[in-house]
Image (cartoon, rainbow, N blue to C red):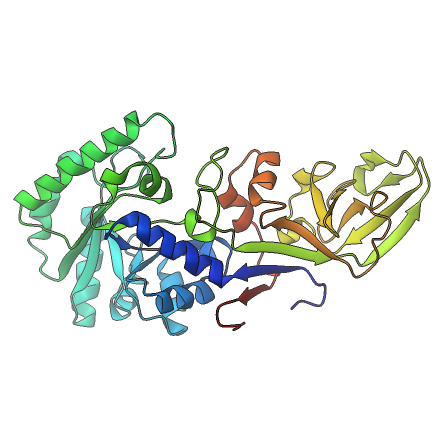
Length: 374
């Protein structure tokens, strides 16, 4: 633990339980947990090992570098890299047994060249753009792309996938259109002789609200960590938040009425106040935008953040918590009593961003309550 006491506690038992719940919802489809971006800030290595022990058949990351880190830590399950092939990484990814994403002729050439250099066939998943307009092959070009791949026996198409744009929306119209486009593209590929082991499009929201999108594989991310797929949606039954960010009170100052607190003097005490100093700030991933807006939990009670959040420190008003003292634990966010979604709402963002903002200098401590392993 960091000497400051600012720590992100990650409950691996909750993640494993959430995975089992996802597997139930998948109704037999393979569950490919998404653990990119350091497992959404939860610590990818520990999460991947926990999921592998739980029997996860696959996992997905954004970058080949993330896949390398998993392999070096002893993770053996198949890995899908969402990022496209690069000359500098593709040979290594093939050696590691990772599947890479392709959707252009250049990707095919890079991957085939890397496979030849390694002397091993490359696994690929074709990305189809069904409406995100971010990455992927147009469904209308599926037949032509299949013809291109026929000239590259070095590449084995293990999967074909797409990505939902708003599967969390109450209006299913666009999601249904994406499913139709994806189904049409799959038919074109199959008619051209490409029959993948895995067809996948469902994310967390797709898995919840669009059962016809489950296909051979599903790729849940945010629900794995016990967080909501969309603002205002709430956490579905059977899922448990895995992360709690805590710190401690390191100093208490008695401040007279009429005194300002922190940079910019945006808060002035209206009474004699006890101001607590917390060793956490925006460099740790606690945003400056929470100044004068957020609260923290101390001894089960709310203490408001007062003044500007600094780079390394934040001040809170302890006047309403007379028993508070230096050394007390402070829940910054996480768990059921101060959910990540509350912070996300204050920032007009989503749960994903809040947990991903927790910086590398905040240690992650992983707890597995079922085995008492740390």
